[in-house]
Length: 304
Image (cartoon, rainbow, N blue to C red; front, side, top):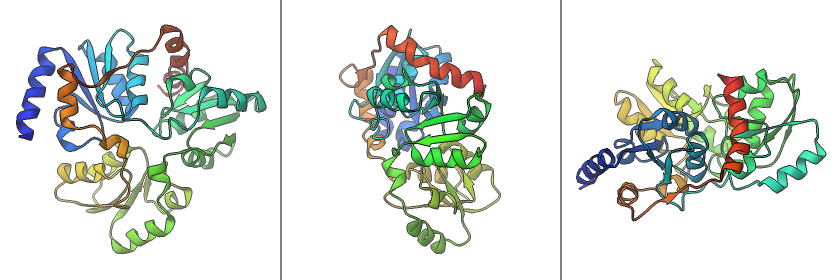
């Protein structure tokens, strides 16, 4: 049954000139029918160069918005309209505009996990994999980093020569994991390397053998000579790595490391979107798009 639905999706996307993007946190059955899988920004870049005129994002809303920002000429759909991002929704344009008044000389650095509207008042955008490189390359010494305080703290600790102002936002899924829980998992698997996403709390990150983005974690695990790993990010990555490296053992940091917004999208959602009875088209007016894409352009300028 799953294979039948997948085959139908593959036929329809070819007939209708559609590119399907799947974030790494999607389930395996969705990743298998995607043209590209990976982190949010990498997917947006792939969409920009893909020949198809229509794009379906299997991820959350800000990811679909980022695709539209970089490819305004394309028709972009979010496969499941309910799939949001709690972190992206924590701060808005009005709040950050007020904060900027109190820190007028600070450059506003926005994690890509932010809304289009918020990006319009930000100076530079970053991803978890590029934040260190980009902020080091920025001429400004004073940085207002939003919204993730944990990622911000990780970056701040690596770049002591700059001044950081952090706000109390972040990913609720990663942030709920405690040091005690991490130690318990490490004690249960003493031979496993601990790979963690910097959205986790600093006291969890400091226990890690490797800290990096989702793609970084997967790449490290695939290339490592080690045979056991604790995966400190969304639990779908454990499954993906089990498929990619069946000769290695992968353990979730916690059974609760689950993003319910990512899990909202199903294979049938993708099929319904292709059939025109599901999904939501992402529409951004050109004035907003032009203002929001500036911080992404700066990210490309500093990060290459």
